[in-house]
Length: 351
Image (cartoon, rainbow, N blue to C red):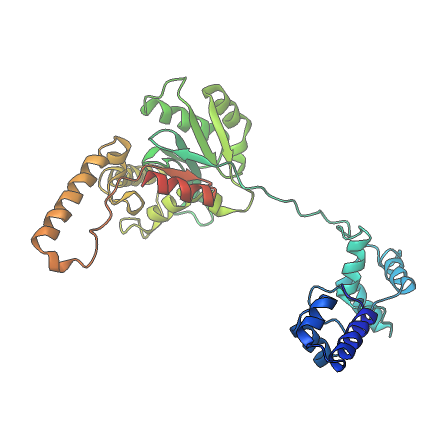
């Protein structure tokens, strides 16, 4: 950085050279600056206006004032308060030391910008591990939802296990209470109904409810060799498949408008819903095939047939298409807790 004194000297030397008959451009080159720089110096004065220049603010607090800020923050009266509270409190007494931002900056500089007060420090939650499903029975998701009953303030509890690749309901039951014992029993029945061997690798994802982390449930998963995956506390979209499943269940037109009279009635309705959902419902997230057909690997043939129908129609009525036909390509991958960038790259490779 060229100092003010050096600029003055350069301008003086160039002026003398020009007065003695030299041209301005060669004179500037001898000094080591351009004609444009010389013009800028003359027009703007001798102060350096470059944005990269570090300047000391004229209103900067001196060392004594900075120490006063730290002493105030560390005093018995204010040691548990944030600058947002300290500055107004001082102002109420007719005292102004510095702005809130200055308080924060000096605390940061002193390494004291940490949690103040007795209440718990907010815990940083890390995103759950990413899992990828390329076929059925690799990753399951499960949760519990309330079903209204005819006793006010009381509910039935629907336990439901879902395969995230096919969206098939692989296991469910309804009880009058929540417990890890019920959850473990349904899990064992679901594995049996899917004919999964003891060596079969399976990831099971859920939220952090007590039935999900109960001793019986955790012991059962360990005994069956199931990999545990949990959502972050109070983050509902970490378990999106189960949440979407329950929305479908409760907003389907056949869902009763009145509460269930008994647990038998609730289970009877759920039997019919499960059959409809798995075998009739064309699921939007899996290219409008049924969960059962995708679970069994039949969706590839269905999608190929749809593609042929569309291509034939385009050949027959080309004026009806301004671009490509609808995308009926087989969806190869489903993600649980996806790393967005990695998922996008994987989708591009799979396409």
